[in-house]
Amino acid sequence: MRNIPVVKPLLDDEELAAVKRVLESGIIAHGPEVEAFEREFAEYIGVEYAIAVANGTAALDLVLKAYGVSSGDEVVTTPFTFIATANAVLYQGAKPVFADIDPRTFNIDPSSVLEVITPRTRAVIAVHLYGQPADMKALREIAEDHKLALIEDAAQAHGAEFMGVKAGALGDTAIFSFYATKNMTTGEGGMVVTNDGGVAERVKLLRDHGQAEKYLHVELGYNLRMTSIQAAIGRVQLRKLDRFNEARRRNAKELSERLSKVPGVEVPYEDPRVKHVYHQYVIRVNDEYPLTRDELREYLRDKGIGTAVHYPLPIFQQPLYKRLGYPQDICPNAIEASRRVLSLPVHPALTPEDLRYICDCIAQAAEAARR
Figure 1: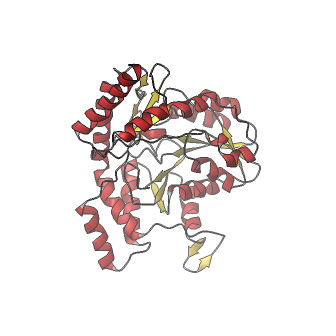
Figure 2: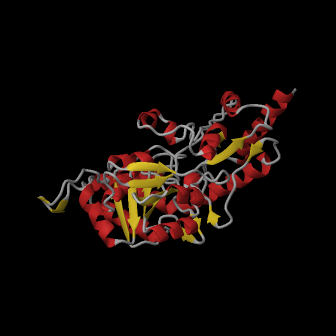
Figure 3: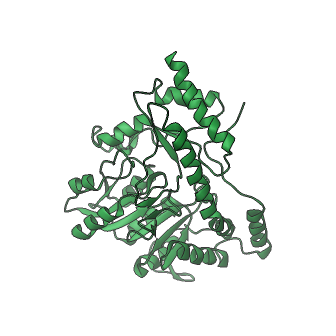
């Protein structure tokens, strides 16, 4: 039986050689390798500053602190993403406020954002879900009209573009994650990118125990530095990123061409203004399909095809947020999406035979269920 994982990090001799070089240098903690990665990543995104940190969650936490978000403030974001986005708001003592999603792109809906802004709103966090940028033109207009910080959670969107501009250079400040499943990885790791020198300096200060200079601590900070080993891997991965993304886009195109012929399977919608990098390839399993989403997932598992559900619950339905008193019936588009979405393999290691097999199995599952 085939074994097709839903995600697969791609690492080879180049990453091994980079790690070996760092180990032989003796500078394995934060050092020149991290600084080189920061320069190269900033240049790739098209921004002035990039600050490497321990992970994407830490990046978002530090950005919110840099903008002074605190108790009593509200930050608008999407409920249909990984919980870290909203949790970073809670870390500040502030309140995440959820706007509903566009059911086509699964990204935050600007019209819903307008409905939930209050005098306490300080920022909007736009998540570029699954590798497709949110509608940053509309969100930028809203942020400017209401004098809000516009923060990009680009943890899933390395190399994605909106109207020819890379994700990370679309808002006031952005964060990336380099977790093992991302389009490029350092194992763990994150990056803050911005053109705001004040934000950059504050993030640098906070990631390193509040040190203005060696052993001079001017405020309460944290140990959230990236290691040179991680940075060495990241530098190699960055050079491969565009090639990886093009492979993902080719794979997504093949999947969509085949699966669009299967009744009840809704393939991903791609906004014509964007370059979608398919961190995840996510179908909707609609009522016309004879199996439920979970039944199809079980069938594919039995055929050796890995899948995932990103995400089975909107954040406000998570036990933590229930205890915080969030209503359970807000954001109906997000609730419906959580019942329908299924992530299929799309990573660059897939072969043409793998892609055909995945699509054939989905079609065969429907045929068998109808008989």
